[in-house]
Length: 607
Image (cartoon, rainbow, N blue to C red; front, side):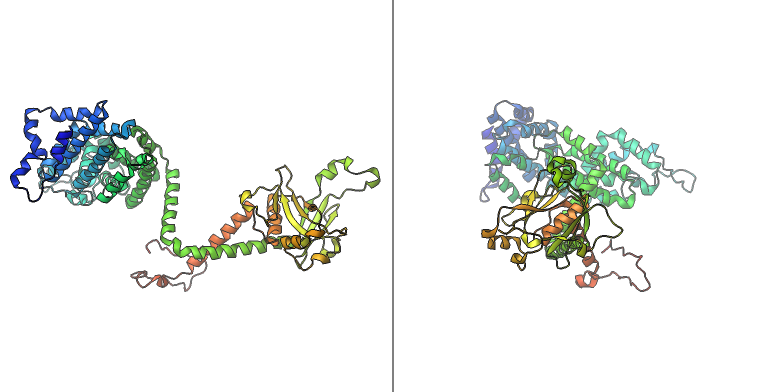
């Protein structure tokens, strides 16, 4: 096998005489093959041998034969040779080897076969469909005959002498072509597209006929164009497997074989199941067309949807995943999940295209949104709020002695002073008709004394908010929402009215460092029990932002993001078409706003 592979793969030097070519290449084996007609069959069967060296040499010989046939044989010769190898089962044998555990011993010949498969697909695609060629004409005629035209629901037109015409006026459009000259519609896919369509029709003739009968009962605009769908799936697969990839990519793949972890990335056994993938993609197209209620003008949208589907399934498939599993995944992918994935991909495309332009704008808007939310949260503190008093005091009579017993205040009202330096509060029995004003709140807390804010309110990223200067602490979760403001008292007892030691220093960390010699251990200065999650978010983030910290609750972060996104949309709406460049608005008439109220919109889908 190794010697035969070397003979076939040998390249003739340009200075060698012409007669020398007969002793090398596929021509050198033709006399022997004529004597031993079962040679190719024996060669393909060697791919199933237990001896990995024999498999590797046999596959190397097959690769050499294929490459020599493609390079040196005539236009009509190499397709017949390739088809003969396929009929002998070479595709199935190599596919099994690619999914086996023997990949390491056969890596190089398998990778070469994969590259040759791309060469074949590219060569078939580059063959233009020419109906003057007998084999092309026969393939197209077979597609038409498989549609069972005699059972078509489309009426035939009558000729002038009262007899029916020989052909249906929609002979090819009935099969899903766009015109009655189907040869031109294979321009993009070439003979590869015709092969895929003919293969589908041949293997699914009954399904094909049933589908055509169902389509004939529908309005023309709602019929699924079967032929165009088949060509679209061929193009999708061609792009997905990067068949037009250069030889340089193959060289890089050879180098990457040195690392075993790259095997799953390099080897794509699904490309050897081209026909079954095409069938699965085509059935998915029919299913999505029906589920979405698509019409003729939605064809390109359906093509994009099927492209997203096949990219997702094939891209997530591992090397050892069977083709049956892949077919099932394509069949079971629901439309809602697919639409969500499509929007995510579209968002990534927009980010790639416009991200570098919008990044600076987004940063500015995020900063503005954060400043806006800081002001909003602090205004909540300025407005004041009611809080429940400590439930532990009310429920635990042992915490006070009989001599200290007095009516327990059920509510606490807290309000930030206008200069934003003090929290005024008072414990009250009940709410009045109006909220108390600052003068009636006799207790107050100097915010310059605050060292940290502890809370059992869940944060989106609690670990990331802790730092050496952070004022946030987290308490264990409980059924009662609780915010505790901690601080350090001076050496003299604080009576709630004298705070001259930190009056001009509002930063808690700086205050702590300057007065550390006069401070005792950290103690609770004020505890709040918010009545709702929204109130808890307002006051916790308001206190943190008032003390120069970042907000941590999910509600505040969500609102900040929402404000930033709306700001971006408003800025984009202010961009005029003529500001995008001289060519952006060429041929597009910008409508006038004159005479319009706020209830209008622009349809800019064509821009």
